[in-house]
Image (cartoon, rainbow, N blue to C red; front, side):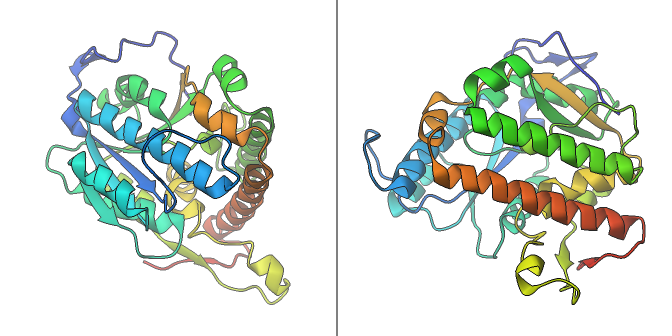
Length: 317
């Protein structure tokens, strides 16, 4: 199932559909890891690519958190070993901060979901990468189908114009290809209807209803048991705890269980600072390629598990 919203409301308007949207009913969960972040101005001539990345992404994260707070949203941040000065900035923002100790990005994301779901006023949960600042302007539009009882899960979709104009060219190509592969794979397993529009799952953000049935889909954990028919190196390519458990498998399960999954297009603009440091980065090029391989492989094995064919993915809770 998919839906395309053309008339985007002003981000400051509280009315959503026939119902009123209260910002306190939405919790934004994000995760940060910036051990080399430093205060003051960005040094774009820094030869330490990791330090430059941590500085740029850390600055964007602080800006996103402040903007979300100004809009009245609840904010949960899972922090894993960021620099002491960055941690101090988080404390000054007076948001809920958790320390992510377990291995794997998915585990940290799910920790944020669990904490956010316990807030009494929260009816909707949003996973969001910390640099995606402009997404905040469209959260009322993204919540609308859930609030109006037409969706359980919303997958934001980047509008083509802004996607191509504001992202590094190689990332546009990688993520468009990745989305096509992932959606076609689900169609082959009869999990996604043949005539459904592609879901922009590689964008990252997901919004879902804070009810036990939907929450369970996003909090389930899976592991991959070694397949003796594969080489040790090939087996290592299957890591649900890295990306898939928290934001990829839940979409597959939601579709499989016939929950209402809706795609909403927004004119999201990627931050110029991040595009600048990633455009000519071999490190980020490799990261995008690795993400594609890992997510497609783990998702394919997960689909086989759901339809009860030969699979090495198993639930652990």
